[in-house]
Length: 73
Image 1 (tube, rainbow, N blue to C red):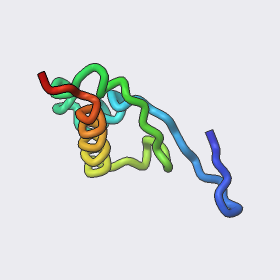
Image 2 (image 1 turned 30 degrees about the vertical axis):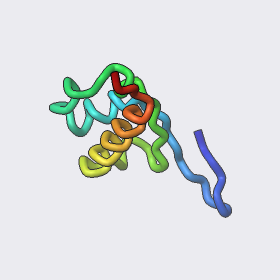
Image 3 (image 1 turned 135 degrees about the vertical axis):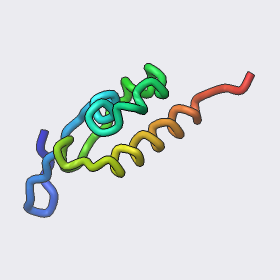
């Protein structure tokens, strides 16, 4: 998928969070829920440009987003 921005072509790639986790932080895979792992993440510069720190930030954000929908019993 490509998106035009100010005369430049920006590469964007949509991947599941599971793909990011398995590539950069596989030790965290068992700690995430299936719903979190199935989350679709849009990467502005593609999967190849991600670093481990980026993955951690994405994982933290995904967890916090899914916790917003959780109900306390």
